[in-house]
Length: 259
Image (cartoon, rainbow, N blue to C red; front, side):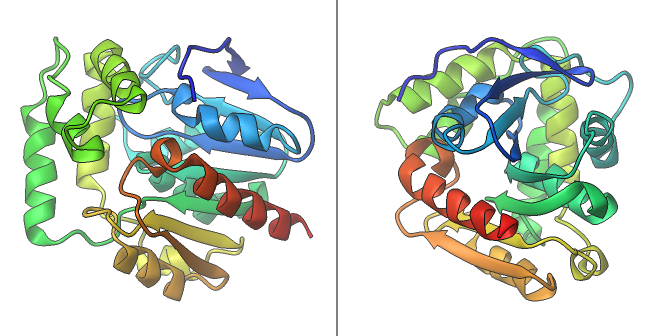
């Protein structure tokens, strides 16, 4: 798999990769990355779907928010670009945004897949992620070595190098804004999960220490049409490290949503 930059087009006031034809699938990436993090999914899904993969606000070629954004701001910016119902998959913070969209804009979401989504962090984990957010500089790019090692270990790989490139080229302001939201959020509310009308897949990796299978199971239990799936030997960056398994789950789920 290659992680080269792809052309962008407009998606509302965001920049996005577009590919394929058919029912529309929206792919939302995580903090510090860009739309190319979905390259393996774009290639697989575009055989049967029209794929839109935007750069998150303040990432890639998308402009940042003025001031201090909230999760609702990120979700609303996506919602304002939508003209018809569609399928959504979000990874990490992208999963937060996808679930918020599905909860607050139910008429726009035919199905939602939340990959590596957090829900009710432990006190130690919450303290650690908030401390990392508070320590991020506003004027320079933070050293990405720690997240790269958390995500990929110490063995060099093309995936790790791609993420290193994205993390060192992201806007410091855009990254800090998004990471602060990610750190302050603790997953969707229980009431919100209970009102989800769309079919919902909570997919994570067995080796994921922060977005655990137990978190996915707890959210699926509350969502009326929720289900879980676990990729046994995967951790946080499974769309990149385990593309075949991730793609199989997504394709099957999206086909079921449309049947």
